Length: 327
Image (cartoon, rainbow, N blue to C red; front, side, top):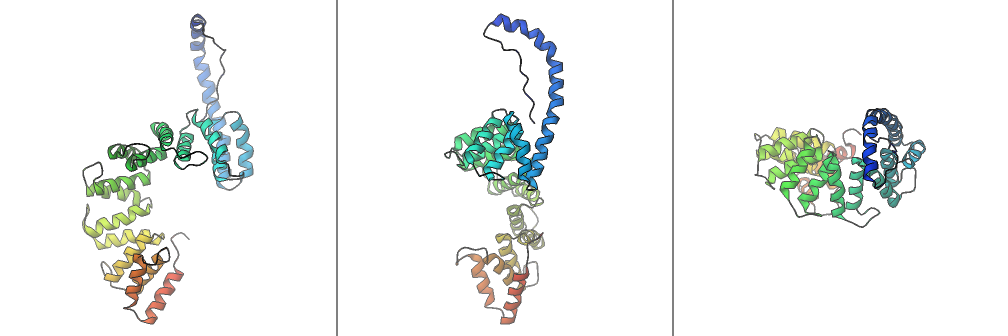
């Protein structure tokens, strides 16, 4: 949240002049703090209105609100306006202008802008790729508790980008973000514990974090949780639970979930063997495949050899009529 700057009388290098001003400044502090406390909500309200306008696609209204505030140095407005230039929302896409605005806000200590600036450097948007600079800005935002920056910082340490690979440091930042409920960080922690990267391998701990992320709809965690139950790693072996979690991912259109659900129907694990359902899920996954030799296409063609033409037609109909959850 931005707080208006209050201009104090200019003080030169004369130490005695500074000392003479200190009692006046100290006496004025309660009033200054009161003014800042009262001013902050007044600034936040129009920025919130602008953000709401952006979300409903009313970019003209958002720009009308944000431009004058950004010119006045309002950090939150600079950050939101920067995002509009980054994505070309109501303006011509302009990474250079986005970076300029992000930097102005980031230099004022706004964590969201610091996170955005880190993203621009990590993805070479308007600037040369510079992972070290990305880490610098993500570090500033992460230290303020910005969950996205904490996750990004953990990813850089896990992958050794801009820093030496360090899973211990990665775990530290993933955990900070995961403890705030950030699903992607919870998923990454699950992977780290499942594979023993920087920690002692612990399937039960992996299941714990995969479940937290899966409950939020994270597709990879839903698929991984299915594998953990299928193989009995960190949880009691259960085909029913495996089908449940693979089904959740498959219903959202995830290729891996669809392949695994097809396999369960193909082999009759946890469900009655059903080649029509197996073909349906394989076929849906195959439609997402970019290579002709993928597992999904091979599995679909293999199961088709066991089916009648009528069964294949029925499976193709079911696949054609299928729609992801929520659509």
